[in-house]
Image (tube, rainbow, N blue to C red; front, side, top):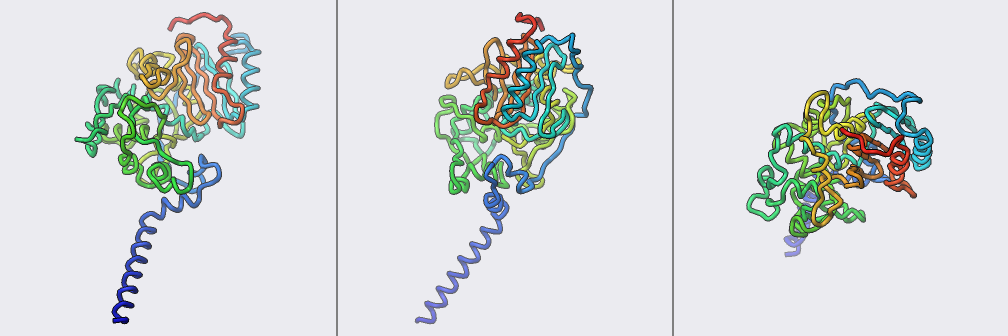
Length: 376
């Protein structure tokens, strides 16, 4: 009897050990990433050497530089903006007005074409990309339900969420918890640091009725990327290349992947050159036209600025500003656009103590040579 009991105990122990080894083997990349997380989580992709998928828009001539005598922003305002940006740990500041480069400054070894991880700004570009998808015919309406592409959700309440609600961050889906090491083992951690971001994104449940609660969330962004992949049959970086990067003549860029050959981290994985972010801003200033082609539907900036009931100041992954302006931002990186003034500002750098997203635009707009509205 005792011998039989010992055999049962040994067999159960072996089974548990085998299951534990199997779990660790299957989940080892994810667990290794969590173990290797640096104090600054934004640097984790570099720390663990996460795979990257590059794409290229071909490149084209850059914007002409305004001569000292031909500047349309006062020199004092440009100098003040440069000083403030440098003091607040910026790595790049570019200012374009009326199609001419008024200011271009870099710090910490960056240059116009240096690829830089823009983190949360990655998500903000989706408002532009979906405009391209509408213009291209890849997507017919932002009010379409996601279950047209996310077939796993058909017959569920989640399936009735619309593309617009995802872009406005009012999907009602759970907000990922990432406030402790234990919470990182859950859905939020698996979305950000795991190797199956599609499965992770699709696992989030409704916490609120869609359209009733605002919360900027990486889940909404990742789902938007999955939709574009399924609508096009292409990998997300290639979709971006075809819809946006090539039409505006941007150069090389890249997206971090959840694993080799896996899904792009749509919510924070983009590395792009400062000069190419300026091109995106100019596309909005030009009412969606680039190189003689209408890349975005006319009036798309107004569409991007249209908010929701829970947050009337937040539109399609962008913040609505005064005087018809728009801000795409994340983690301190930002693109500000005022189409009527033909003004684009790009600032890259972390949000350090004392950082205020309204300071640079206030300085530069206050220095416009003639404070009038310019016709497009």
